Length: 226
Image (cartoon, rainbow, N blue to C red; front, top):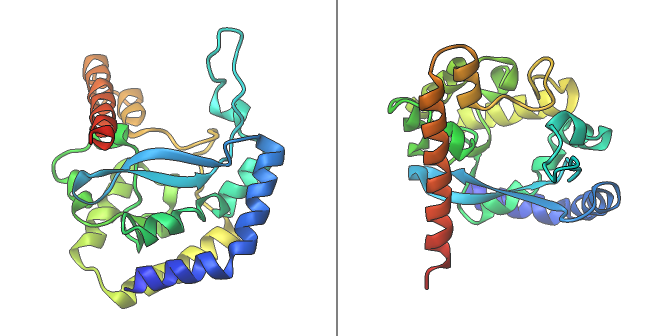
């Protein structure tokens, strides 16, 4: 009930801000204004998470998208640094796919690399912010980030969530810390993190990437099946 009421409040009170940001994204980055991406939610049910677009669709001579750092504009960086790009997730909360506080909904290709214990983070609804986000966000390593998620689900309280909300507002709007990893335009995927540090081999990396693509494809088929 708290999530439903608060998401409605955010959408209604800040409708003017949604319109302004949407217009600026359309002018500066083109369409579509919203970026939609499949993410694993509660019980690993895949849903489409909404965000304001922060990158262009620039491609090389062969039709491949340019690296993230080449497509992420200054305007896009501002949206990310202030977390304004995540405002559309209020609609995910209203739909019951997310909560205000909980483990962040990561990529499907991140989930497949997690251990069974780490995947317990999906026993609850994912959140707009969480314990990991107020304790370093992408500035901490993946193992610590996932440890924070497991720590959070062990003891969920209303007062604890309110504390995280206040810390989130402070870090996102004032300090703007931990948004990306040092020297990178965006955060490193979990699989890339494990591969680059020699924690998994190339064969396992490639097989898990295929597994993630199959999960997403199966979800698309289920959604389109009458």
